[in-house]
Length: 266
Ligand code: PBE
Image (cartoon, rainbow, N blue to C red; front, top):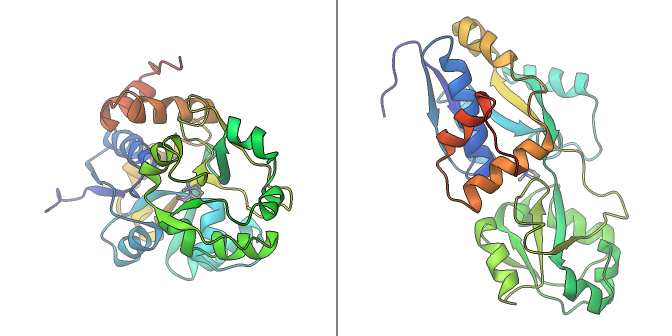
């Protein structure tokens, strides 16, 4: 698709929250100048490639993802180190949005109760349990390869689209899945989120990841985006994810209500 002359281009990954955040970014930037949203481009690698190539100017990302997956650090680095290494690639670490959305493992609470599973290390006692893990999680540096090693898990996980994993657990096809902690379906599906008792997962604070040149090419839109710093509490993000996933409302409407102060958090 062709873009409007001078438009700031927002990108997003292919999962509910990223689409919503992409719309919040686009609508916010659009208060100051032309802005567009290339929605649901793909997984982290795909959206990052689009950013580096200049096909997009900014997208919502997560600090742990930048640290572990994009920069390949094996232990958490400081914000300063992360910002410096990103700058070497022409990228910038922008405002934190105010919430974190991390990985965790979860399973139906009744099943967890029956099998006495409360924490990830308890899974080692159940080598035959069926894990259904999202494709990206299966291959990531901060995903299954490191998790299984840290916890000594020998189960062979199945790959599944994150969007299908809740139904697959409800129907008993899989027993455990990787959830994103701001997913809206955790409470209504009566899931138990297993404690990460060996502190495997990093923190995934939502942040803006952008091209350094975007700030100078689109100063007005860029300035407007700074207003989003710390504006989105986790409860609001979970409520927005719920409106998309449980009520199937359009991402743009959800973003508009949030920005207008009309988010129904019920
Ligand atoms: N997530 C959960 C992150 C990592 C943890 C899916 C929101 C992401 O990289 O997209």
